[in-house]
Image (cartoon, rainbow, N blue to C red; front, top):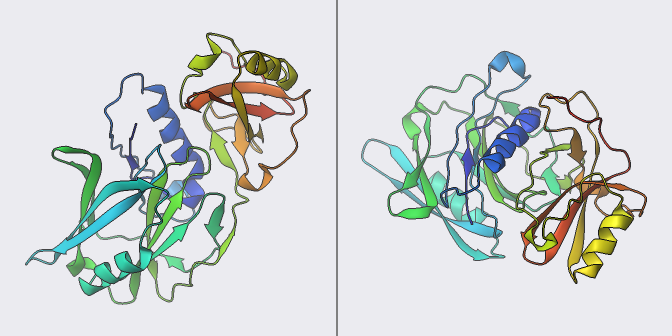
Amino acid sequence: MNRSLAGFEERRLAELKEHVVARAAAERARPPRRRIALVTAAGAAVTAVASVVTVSSLGGAAPAYAVTKDSDGIVYVTVRDTAPGDVPDVKGLTGQLKSLNVPATVDYVPAGQKCREPRGTIVTDIPRGLYHTPTNIPGDPDGWQMQIDTKLFKPGQTFVWSLYVDSITGWNGTSTILMRDPVAPCELVPDDSPHYVSRMPWAKATSLGGYQAQGKTVGEVLSEIDKRGLKVTYLVTELAPDKPRYPDMSYVMYPTKQNTPVGKDWFVWQADEVEKGVIRVYVTQKLAAPRHH
């Protein structure tokens, strides 16, 4: 099943990104295969504003790209999913964009990593119409397209594209930030930033047959999983380091801490089943206080 999200501010709006994803998950009982959502935030709420597009694929497939340009200087970028495990051709995409007068640099960022920051100065006064938010491709539920007006770039500006794999969902994403030159190359470093995690599971743990794992110890849940002949993976989380801006995000996940040994006396606050027969349990050493409605 595929779906996409688009148009959120990156980095300093990471918690907003997670909130959007959580809302999408909460509404996905019977979603279309591909969805596009738009989120905006007031510039006063962040120290830097960036324009970001995300294309997501639960199967882990890397996007395939096509770039064309019309006589008015409008560049059209088309994205479609390809086979799982493919690594995006970032050099090819960079070359296509530059050949059509889109000043851009494209990098691939694997799950659990990020580009060392800062890479450059972020442009906050992005001209209206420089790019249009993505739209679905008629007849193709697994792809999207967007357009960029090359006439609106100012000298010394670069679109910085990072094609990444989300550390929680496994979705592929593309973030685009307009920066002033010079822009430093992407130096991959471990992603030690907190990723806010929604209380809504990505996929119901149907193989547990209605068993409620929430609030039980890891030892109790493992016993039930073993009894049913299922496999288990962990998402190691901890309490959010600050007061959650959204009540359904009391926990954060750090990619650099995913190899932490999990004790049987830890707690399970959520379980899902992204892959049939494999239960992913969200574990924490300390449970968040119950929510009051």
